[in-house]
Image (spheres, rainbow, N blue to C red):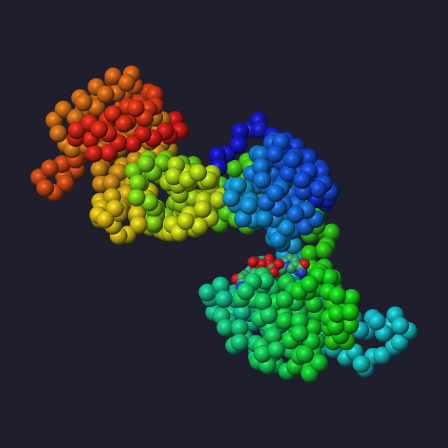
Amino acid sequence: MTPATATQTFKILAADKLAQQGLDWIAAQPDAELVNKPGLSESEYAAMLAEGGIQAMIVRSGIKVTREVLANPGDLKVIARAGVGVDNIDLAAATEKGILVVNTAEASTITTAEHAFALMIALLRNIGPAYKTMTGGGWDRSKFQGRQLSGLTLGVVGFGRIGQTVAQRALAFGMKVVAYDPVFNSPTALDGQVKMYNDFSAMLPEADVLTFHVPLNDATRGMLDDEAFGRCRKGVYVVNAARGGVVDEAGLLKALDDGRCGGAAVDVYSSEPPPADSALRVHPKLLCTPHLGASTKEAQEAVSSDAAAACLAYLRGEGIKGAVNAGGLRVDLNDQQHGFVDLAGRMARLLSPMITRGVARVEIELAGKELAKAAGTVERAAMVGLLRGHLDDPVNMINVADVAQRRGIKTKTAVIDEPTEQGPQLTIVVHGPDGSVDGKTHPADRTRRIAGRVYDDLKPRVVEINGYAMDMTPDGHMVILQNEDLPGMIGTVGMAFGDAGVNIADMTISRRDTGDGKATALMVLKTDAKADEALVGRLSHTPGVLKIASVELPG
Ligand code: NAD
């Protein structure tokens, strides 16, 4: 995405009721205009977007951003969820339309960790039942003897933002902390204070208290069930402020009844709200809250201003925060990195017309560790450049990974620390499908390769196409022509352009031996006007011309 111009004003639609702090924040931005319209119907939002002019939309969980709402999204570039869960947004539809979806998970991290911690203390000190006894006129001190946190071992399941925040607080309370997270590659965490496990079963017997901070997915659904309770310490305490269903509710109730679980505190349920007669509401050893994890004044204010800030940062080209559907894409790049993203798009567009037998695999190599941050963005720009001309569907930086995956195209991007002798370099290699085409094998046609650099002047340069060395700036109207290296070819080509009234502004010629004592040449021409189909068609039938393609690149 190119950075916005200073004079541009972005219209931000608040489609759910947002905390005042977020609305005030938008109003204070010189380049933002707030359209505060919560509570409309889906069809009204659809019509509003289709009219155009709205670049960002902020939602909470009240509105459903369906495929119908996004059918004609007008100028919409980004949807921000003020909060975490994006179940109310049709991510596939947004991705297809090239709309970035972000959430504001960080804004509720501390708040949710504090709630999990509050649940843990309340559970171990019987705050809930003791309060109930008091309000009922009773006074029972012996019945509510609790457990001291200090000295107990806390098992944190899911060591992401919230899990780590809970762990820090537990350490401050003198607890021993162990944690399980399969995506954590170190034996310890938090300066060696937390022992990490990558086997859930192995961690279970270590913990006096288990606290869950994982997303709900196929791997985590019911991960603490009847069987897993069998591997826990007898009387283990359980806290779930993650997602309902992570702790199997039937298994939990059974373990509470038979004493394998000493008590549980639950904020989230597999069905919300749970039925009025659910045992989860009334079990004497279960402390329940109605999904209050992120419900603090601070978090609600932070999610709305964070959502607005995330929208504007993206629209201004400053950065992407909390992306849900654009892994690897960055806009906060330096000039050189931006230069390589631009170069990737141009190189891929040059290569694109030479790909006539399909794309199976794309390998991208960046030489120079200073380009590492841009790797994901370079990959997306290259894929957009390669695919755009071949597909009817619109392809853009947000949906390209999805489009490529749906077509079975594999991509691999590698960053090599050392730049080339001439400086950092980008190479794109496109492999066609294996095997024969039309009963013949075309080994030379199956692989296309292009390499380029961005020097200190920040101009893009192509230094090689399919083994032909060159130094050329890829911009404007371009024609790539491969021919047998015969006398008179340059004149023939020049005449054809002259006859068509197309002026050649620049020409680069590179030769390559074909290994049989002959050579072929690649001419890259820049013209003042587009070489039309008639000219390209005529040249393609000229003796000695092997291939020709015309490409339009930004000036
Ligand atoms: P996060 O993405 O930062 O962390 C999640 C962690 O879970 C990651 O480190 C991931 O590697 C780990 N994980 C994934 N699969 C796992 C598995 N099979 N076993 C163990 N660990 C696994 O997310 P977060 O911001 O820390 O949020 C954690 C959870 O809390 C989310 O489910 C979120 O929806 C929930 N949450 C609840 C409330 C609430 O109101 N109760 C509020 C905010 C967040």
